[in-house]
Image (cartoon, rainbow, N blue to C red; front, side, top):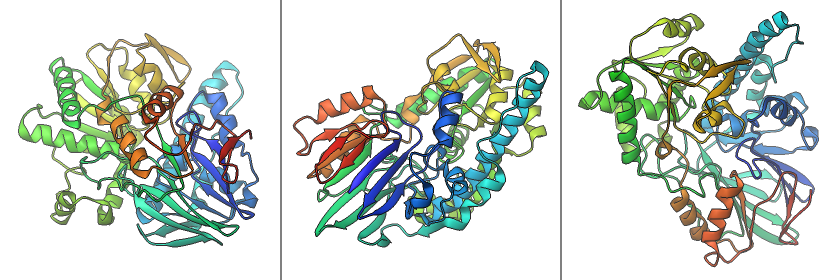
Length: 472
């Protein structure tokens, strides 16, 4: 068995891994790389393998950094099955169409400006027509059900507790008379968060563990402490008659924030102000949440049965669908909370809200998730004094607050528990993390796991026969 690392290697975005077993090829993930525009375009449009040669694919969850390149893969000739959970299958259809729509709209907006400047037009990475073609290849799978994906390769999907439908991928691989058990964590969720169930941890019978290390260098703040900080930030912004602008993933983080705001306004710890979810995707996501009770914890199942889902509806909440409604928010001067995609502030309506509100010191921008290097979200999180949006420079006069404890990713403590519980026999491979995260986590694991630990670089290859990472 060989594992080729074609994305989210020594970085966090663009998840993509190719496994070769007995002449067959299995792709895990096909995520969009997010970062500097020119680099992102090149990496997303160029595959390091021929998509025609793939036999099957498995997707851990619907976030764009794990699924966003599927339209390009299909357009390049892939025609095999894409296995994932039922909830992820429904979500990814929506998210890819939304991603394509955003790219088309942003390309149109940029081209209007380029035309006036005498610059050449840009093209979207893919169109809605490209995105629509993916659905014919996706196959929904039950959690924990055995699935024969290739000759000699059986898969099981376990709840990763990250977002609706998220999964860790367990593979039992038989090759050359030897059986190996491989586990890919996907994005690991946090226990005791609202809505979804807690993550399933791996057993201690693994040969190879490949896991994320996004927050390997950070101990998460207790969610209750993070929510208290969130409440204080929103409260002081409302008191100075400002707007709260939150870039957030439309699936997962948005629902958790709405849940928290609902609770705070209901108990009186926040004044009742309008909350706008400005993402057409979030509206459609709500109906998918209603259909997939198998992904929820017991408390949320009861809410849904009573038709009072706390993360989808309350009296101060409005879902914005049209562009006109979205633009109207920027003309208003009253206090409000605007939650808008994308989570890294790279594309979509969030860019318009930022450019219209970033220079007003009454307003606050709250960063609630990890931000990839070279994204607008990272520049804001690093407190840059001036940022560029749609080719124009804006002074950052709004308050910028980062609240890490709201992350749906496992923190350092849970990552350590995950790795030591599995204690793989042959190798521990870290992906989905920057160098500082890996170095801190691997140092803390020294002497606590029996297998060697590696941090593969882009295009490197893990060879199970040699049990080491080789140059690509």
